[in-house]
Length: 55
Image (cartoon, rainbow, N blue to C red; front, side, top):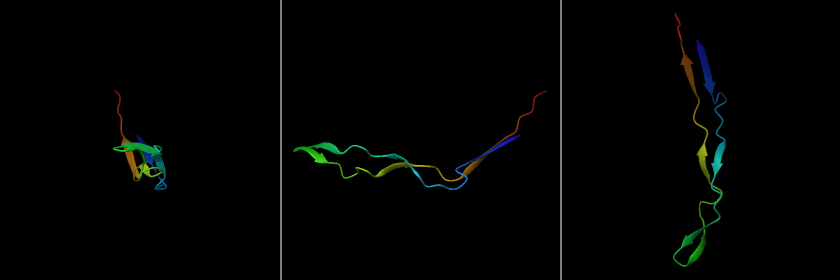
């Protein structure tokens, strides 16, 4: 048997941040309003349990 706990401390850290400073608009380059915002966070706490039997 094997058990694994993921994100045991329930950390809410950012894994990915929007790093695109400007986007193409109708009048040329415009400031990206989403620049610096978090795009992906770590998942909530969960675990897996694996049982294996060989014969």
